[in-house]
Image (cartoon, rainbow, N blue to C red):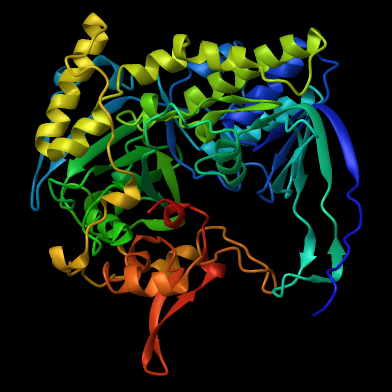
Length: 532
């Protein structure tokens, strides 16, 4: 037995506020803090090699948050909001045709008039420039790997991951100890299902009074299409085929500037059939007669996948804990029917910044800024999410045809009269519990990719900006391999080989028995395996 290696002490830096994640929430919080008090010291940690590297391009943004954060942004020439929404289409797809739903039937909050089609990565880079101009320190390429606590159990900072750890888990010749970044308060804006947020939710029991969390997997590609197929400003959403009526999900096409089109497909992760293959459903979707014409003669430029929070109003955990708060998608502020979360992310960052700046001005530090938790439901964030709180559970309970219709009715009554016939519905099972044994379902025969319109996962990962060092430790682990065999393989027919959008997991025959293989280098950090 060898002695444990004694690691060197961490170097530390002290700030007023430490922010994890350079997304819309984290950057907005940083900007707002400096707007309130220029003397505050604020640092933002970003795991990507650069700001925006882990943000998928192509989104429709409601500018309500940016308007409040930077009221004069429209007077600038170099802002990233280049493409106003000019057309808004909603399609119901069948196997061979489509029906466009009249816009007049759609609830008013689904209207994208006044919104912008953007590269969210460019928006984050623009916000980062604003933050740095105000004196915010931003450290890209530094992932926060550990929460730090004081003797009373309050959060006092985070530590970045150690560098130079080899596959064995031991320090290599280029080992460097991670740094401790200490603050009076810590804001966690690391995105959906982030590791630090999960730890904090568990440690402080933040989800005690919340409904179960719910998620979808969003798979997205960015294309450069032929000029005649490009319709700048068009936003198109669809539901229906190729998903069955019992499986929730849908698509989006966003026509940006410069002949660019972002196309994506969302599958709700409470699907039941373990043979369902979200990546292949997306590829199949692009072959629909109402869709494929957009991409004929075009070129695929990038690919990515991320989990999306779908629990909404009733699933948001308590935001505050001693020493900090959850913001943005770490809290779950996505508006599911609108497929939008960046506006609420910005607003949540601003709300947290306002209350934390007040706490620091009052001489407080490392305590619970409960004002954030007490105020968010009465804010525009709470109002936005409350109006759509039943859309997801109605869809899950009644399927696509009936559930979407009831969800639409519920949005209308909430919008016009401020009430719901359904009250506030519960979600029921977690997404993991929703999966049914393979014996209850038939295999799905998916067509082979043609390499022109449809593709395989490995060629897609190549375009995903994924980068793992060859000798770094594997970050994905199976807790109980015997259970993995008896349950994941024997009962559910290996769904991880299908729900992963990057081909990370495989069951292969080795020495006469099925062996589980993890290709961690392919991982695009979508969090689906942690959820499903």
